[in-house]
Length: 128
Image (cartoon, rainbow, N blue to C red):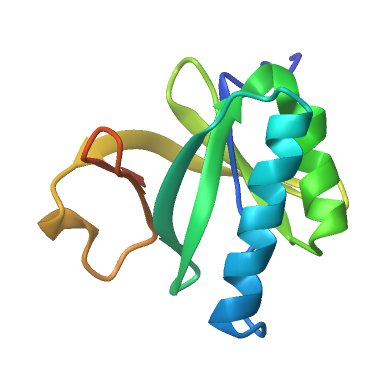
């Protein structure tokens, strides 16, 4: 079966072992890079592996940009979200891990879970 193209990708340049000031600088630099490449994006916040981070959502057609971000910022993976709401983590070595379905939740439902928050809409999402 052919794998489906991603509808959206979510990627971050945050690194667990980097001080917050370094992560903020990297995020700022990444946003500037995306602007130079004319890649439309939405800024979001979230928690991945228990670490709070800023991240970016953009259209799946820019999947190669997500791969470049992973390489350039030494990221382990990025998330692909498909039209059927299914999600996969795509690792830098090409391995894919199916996660489940992304759904909108309340802030209370995000407690203790990996999640994504989109400040521009006030919406929270988790994958189950």
